Amino acid sequence: MDDDAVRRMLADFSIEVTPRETAALDEAAALLPPGTRVYVTDLPGVDLARSLDAATRVREHGLRPVVHVAVRSIPDLAALDRTLGAVADAGVEDLLLIAGSRPPAGAFENTLQVLESEVLARRPFASIGVAGHPEGNPGVDEGAVDHALARKDKLARDGGLPLHVVTQFGFAADPVLGWERRMREAGIALPVRVGLPGLTSPARLLRFGLSCGVGPSLAVLRKQTGSVLKLATQVYRPTETLLGLARAVSADPESLISAVHFFPFGAVVPTARWATTGQKDGLGAETA
Image 1 (tube, rainbow, N blue to C red):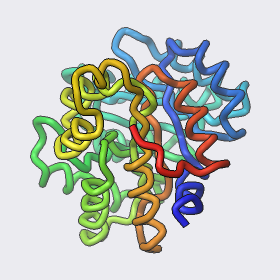
Image 2 (cartoon, rainbow, N blue to C red):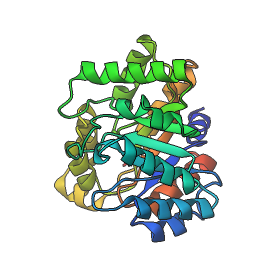
Image 3 (cartoon, rainbow, N blue to C red):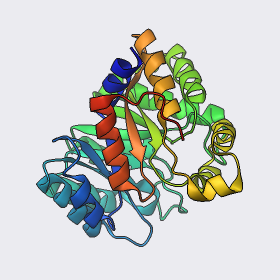
Image 4 (tube, rainbow, N blue to C red):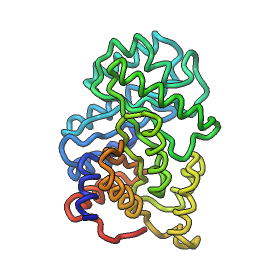
């Protein structure tokens, strides 16, 4: 039963690459099922043209590019129109809108302002992802985060926007499952891709987790990895988190969780190999 539940959870997994990881993308493409969603991240100092070049490469491999757009880096509506036009002209049909960690360059402070804009309404994207934060968003009140997601859900219902949620990565299933139930009880119905870390070192994951505001599940990572020596030598696998999610979703047909999304943190090829092997063989009792 666990293996069947895991296979269903992995049936439509997605993965991230940075515009600088084209060599890894070329190798990973041989492992990924055709049509797999590959999210091209927005990096400081990397311009949109380079991201779109990476997206074109994703598509040439028979995969589906999803381009990140960090709205705080866009100064005004005219620049937003140019950005979305360039994305569409590159043949990209899918977006992930994030606020971004940089100070606002101009008019946009959050993704709601873009979602409500006429500029976006003129672009018929097939899907638009927005961020979810099961363990909180650093520096932002939890109530404000929940309210913003409720407004996005209303936009999807009333305006037909093809929205879905991609959550921040975490190291335990329980915080995600609790957050999903709370969102559902609030009337939110957006499908959710749950962020999982890829197969990189626990030390690197701890560093990213602290900087990204991942809270309660960091204790799980520390417990799993143990000593400082293990932190340096192990490779983390999100097996237990994936199993916990798969069991819960299998037992709850009303769950909003539809798939998982991998944040490889540089380990694109090992993560792709592990995810595709998991589909075929199950993940058993493998742990970090």
